[in-house]
Image (cartoon, rainbow, N blue to C red; front, side, top):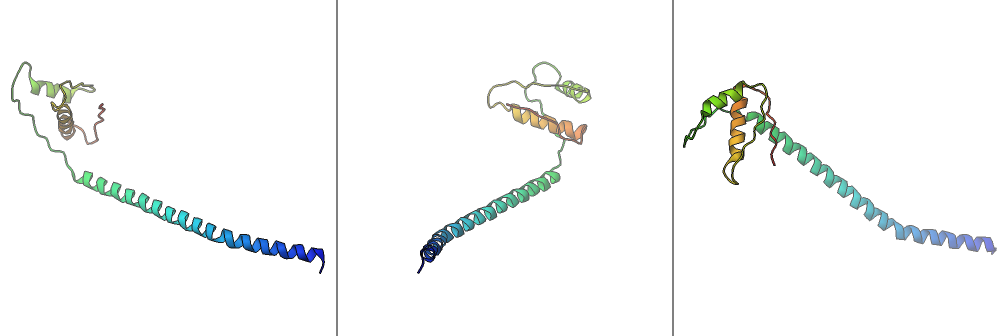
Length: 128
């Protein structure tokens, strides 16, 4: 038996052992990343479906004009002010008040009324 054939046998045995050790590792890794990809794809599809459902719900919602009831009149004419806002080409408004006094509710309802009367496109609102 020559020296060359001895080394060749050990090489083949070593490579076979390495193959047997690495195979389960790479199979496990493939299953893990494959499952992870399927999970991510399902998550993405779920988000898309939810967005579509929200879009359908929003299309069904129709704004209805409901005038405000003046409970405690102070000074000024609310309805005259409302009319001037509706007729103005461009206005920026700031609503001031204490925490929990209904500033956001007032602003949203006011814009909803504005949209019913004048616009068919959404009105931009910035809050903080």
